Length: 287
Image (cartoon, helix red, strand yellow):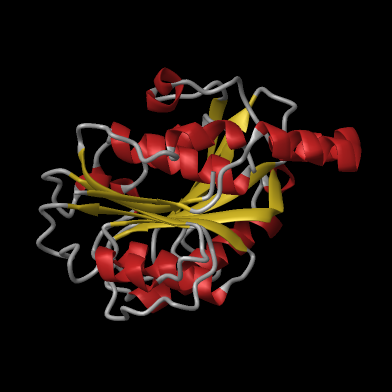
């Protein structure tokens, strides 16, 4: 089953009108002010690494507000600043369970922190607070703070970390994009959420079944908010814990579109993707 709702289409005429009204600067913004890297292709968004080399810094567990982690960032380039992304693991898990996403996203032009939580048993509300603390650390206290644009911040997370990423966006209006993976939360109503949110669920998830978690979360988010729901065919709850091309390519495209305003990536999200690994896709496609 596929359901795609297209709410807005950009046209060449509209872009030409924008250029005529606001001049070259406005046209540059319409094309994507924060573009990094060459024009994307299907091959480039599926690649394990992007165009940037990646450095990493360990973050001590003594840091305030969360349990430490690792920062991944682009190196060998004078491009920047880059958008910042914080990613939380799931219940009982450590950052190692989602660490593969750090360098993968950083190599495409983001500064990413994968976090350990204060306790492996922290609930989504606590993980939301820790994601927000990690973003604050990234922009204010990290060794690469000068590489991070504090106006362009995103969050992601797995399981309870995914539920935490949903709650973090409600708490922090500075977050501009969220990607929860197999999210778990007792709260089912996110009708106040206005942050562009892309929920990825697993068809065979028995820990956070999509009918009780991912789908109600998605449906509760108002249609006025840019949102998408992708269900991976036969995937269980732990699909984010190993490198997965489908998860990575659309996570990348979502963050590029909504953190970098890079409309070159809209083509991979609108119209709805038809990868054979996707069993269902819904969205309020903005392009």
